Length: 102
Image (tube, rainbow, N blue to C red; front, side, top):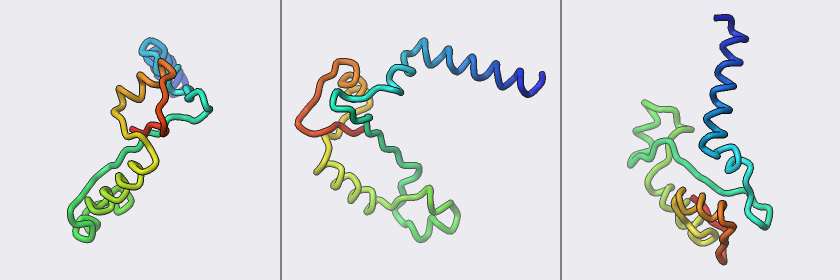
């Protein structure tokens, strides 16, 4: 299969999946005040950053201590919710006193 045909087939399949799961609407969704949703993910949480960096890419690591600091900072500024709750709020337009983050 030619590369351009393969690429086109993959794009069409991806668009179909995004549309059928409504992920296309959520991807462009914003809250009523215009803010996009905040979703944060970490690749690898480790106890000993110094030891782990010798066998892993340092940019992919975060120490448990630093993760705790990140969560504390986020909790002071955002309402920490699950992805399901964030999706529900986006679909219903529900809002709280602070912006949500998942």
